[in-house]
Image 1: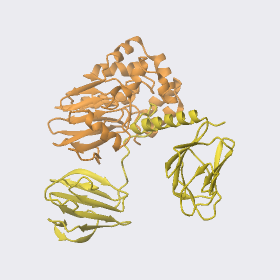
Image 2: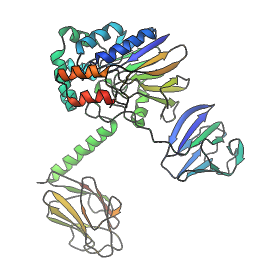
Image 3: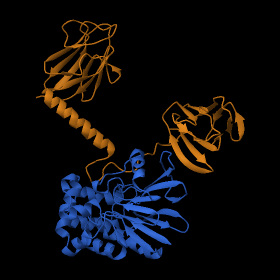
Length: 231
Length: 242
């Protein structure tokens, strides 16, 4: 992954390791690399990354962009090239392992980091929800008629027809576009409509065994699957 | 003035002896212990006694806390639970008294010392990544926060209000306008891929903090662990440093 070292008065003040194809550099807080200095324009420059190179582009800034002390409007960056913007220097490294790990995930204690706390809280809410419904639940996330649907029947239908369990929106959606079929303790999602599409976590599917927290899209309607302890 | 900071001895006498000998060679002014004298290893009484003698300040770790019965070991992973059962059986009354004098945190010169995290010292959370580090920077006002707990030595820097980042290298100058979280690693059970004991020296005159590594006779420790019935996983990991 490419890395940019941000230097100020010859000191490294930040390391930016990015997976993005393009990052913005400028004075305002909405930039990927913020250089808070009056000599820096609000949207001063853009850096685009390729597999093993990068291109810096001056966004017609007031004070310009310099690469290895030469003023440029666009320049391909090589390893260790130094981009000067205002009082800051950005040093480019094409491939640095993303070292953000500060510990092995096998401490003595049961994990209680912030993310772990968030996960536990989410899990607790999901459990309360499914306990209350007495079944696994679909949560309406977008273009859904209801906030939640209990999956308490052997078959649940999605579509534009009158008698479906879960009405959905979308131009190409069939009267019955998708079904969720209960298979023992599990749920199988089946796309049955001809023209409309069913997606799970962004991928188009014909048949799919649902897992907790899957995001289901039927046409333009979006639902989240919350697995209960249905027996 | 040069100071030593060591942590996570975990009843490993051979590793502790190597580190204490190094304190003397390095002519350190004072040494500070950052917690977890016991747990995992075969010699809790010997280690507790040595730490009590050499360290000017002794912090509480989660294993010390558990040995004193102040937290339930059901929060521990299975190997740590088993090791804690053995530790409690081995620990003498005198050692328990020493452990009970350990403190949760300490402020010294430009540093704040705590075993787990500055945010919640008694929750025994970990700093696993830069996001965890970022949120902990606002919970101490000194320039440096020295921690142990994860057995993984790292130096994280933060310049004013910019994003924190991982320092590359095992030594750093403590510079103006920067704050630091430094994990000083583990004496008795390193987990960063090296089987050498780890501790930190801070040179207050030069303003340089350096992580030191020292080889020790881990095979001797392993043999004692085997004899005293410690889990094989804990014995193996001393050689691997994982």
